[in-house]
Image 1: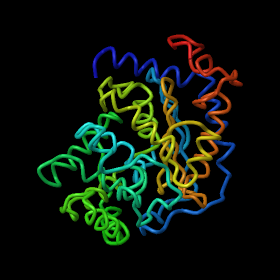
Image 2 (image 1 turned 60 degrees about the vertical axis):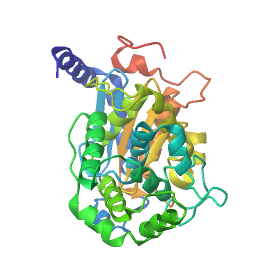
Image 3 (image 1 turned 90 degrees about the vertical axis):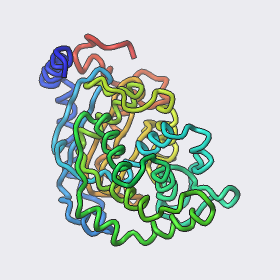
Image 4 (image 1 turned 180 degrees about the vertical axis):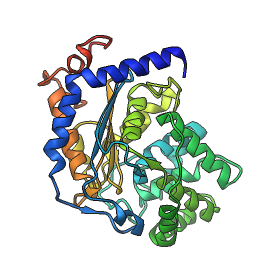
Length: 343
C-alpha cells in the first residue's frame, strides 16, 4: 500500500476508536446479541456446524473508515452473496445485452432453489436465484475450470483487498448434495441457457459459494459498490463503473430471497443475503454494511442482520427513497463531519 494509503488506514483506525458511531454499533450489537430466534441452516451438512451465538457487524464508509464490532472477523462461506458479484463479472465479460439473453431481471415468488424458468422466455428469472446464478457462473470466461476459478478469486480480492480461500469441506458437501442444482442446470441446458460443460460450471458454482469471507469483507464489498466500483481503501477498481447500477438494482429487487419486497420497503438498501448468515448492504455514495449471524428466519435471512440494517437505515436516513431528516446525521457521528461530503 502507498504512503497515502497507510495514512488513510491510520486515520480510519483513529476515527474508529474516537467516533461515537463506534459506540452506537456496540450498543446495536448488544441490543440484538440476545435475539436467539431462528435456526442455523442445515440443508448443506457443513453449514450446521455454525455456532448460533456468532454475531458480527462492520460498516465501511465511502471514504474508507472502518467500524467493526463483535465477531466481524469470524469466517464463513459466502454462499448466495457471491451471486451478485459474479453477475457483475459476467456483465464485464459479455455486456448487458448478451447476459440479459441468458438471465432475466425480474423478481419471482418462487423459492430461490426452484426448478423453474420463465415460461415465455425459458430464462431464469434473475441472477439472485440459483438458476440465474448458475447461468451467470456459466458465462465466466476461462479456458478451463481452474482459470475461471482464479478469475473469480481475483475479483473478490479486488473487492475486499485480501486473498480468499475455498472451504473445501463445504464445497464437497455442496457438490455431493447438489441434486436440485444439477436438475436446474440440465433444464437450462435443454433450452440453451447454459453451455454443455455442466459439471465444470456446477463445480465452479459450488466453489464460489464456498469462498471464505467475514463481515468486514462483506462491508468492504458493499462499500466498493457504494463507491462506484472502487475499493475505498486500496483504491483498486473491482468492477467497471458502467455495471455497478446493474448489480445494485437487482440486489434491491431480488437480493433478499422471498423477503425482497419487504426489505425494499422497510430498509431500502440494495442487499444480498446468504444461508450461512451473512448480509451485505449498500448505501450508494455513502457506505457499505456487512453483518454475520447464522440464525435464520423462515425466509432464510439472518434475523440479527435484518434488525441491524433496519436500525441503521432508520437512524441515519439511509433508505434510498428517504426524503425526511434522519434521526442522526452519520457524517457528524463518524468524524464530526470532517472530510465527508454533504450527503
